[in-house]
Image (tube, rainbow, N blue to C red; front, side):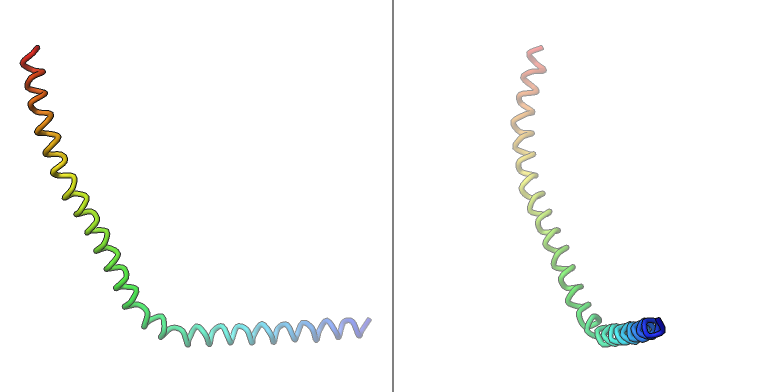
Length: 88
C-alpha cells in the first residue's frame, strides 16, 4: 500500500513540475511575442483604414447612382400627379 502511495506522490510531484514548466514556457512566449504584436499594430491600423475607405467609397457610389434615379422618378411622377390632380 505504501508503494502505491509513494507512486501517486511521485506522479503528483511530476505533474506539478510539468505544470510549472508549461506555465513558464507559456509566459516566456507571451513575453517574446509582445514586441511582435506591437510591430503588427501599424499593419492592422492600415488594414482598418483601407476597409473604412472602401466602405465609404462604396457608399458614395451607391448615393451617386441613386440620386439620378430619384431625379428621373420625380420627373416622371410630377407630371402624372399634375394630370391626376387636374382630372379630379
